[in-house]
Image (cartoon, rainbow over all chains, first blue to last red; front, top):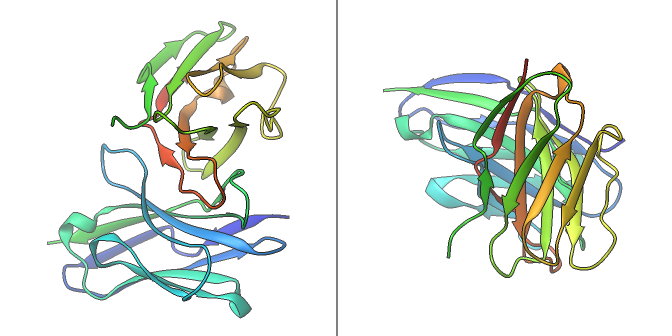
Length: 114
Length: 114
């Protein structure tokens, strides 16, 4: 069955700490991978995406993610978080070459203390 | 131009009533998606429209749920005889509809069924 697993449901960090949020997926075939972010009171927006090519992708606000095919993983990282990174983070996958439904993880709530 | 818009932003209804939710996609986006997010759960795919093709309705949870889209414009999601378990945030997204396109999300409609 197609699924996405996010290992951390709630993460609390202090400013300047490093962040890594885990994401593993189960999906037959070649995939597109996404991280979306939802800041408090705002709607979902794309943080970064992987379609093909370099497995290390860089997104907005200093975030990056690495696609490791052998591990079916797409972990999100940021070397130094800020208070403004407090948000809900969602990992999602769909099949490469189509635009069909995204399969979503349950999300990780990140709170960054100033 | 403007992003994806949804109305109403909040809807409170009584069990058994019908509700209609509206989505205005980004102009020029041929693909449109509906998702549902229940409290504490990840996003759940409901239905996908792509141009004039038959919609992918595989995510609709019951025959009480239906959706329409006229051409490449507005879509309405209708829930008949609402139940308490229908309470959720209903999210609409649109994309260009070409291979491997990002989905852009609206702010959602929060539905509460009393």
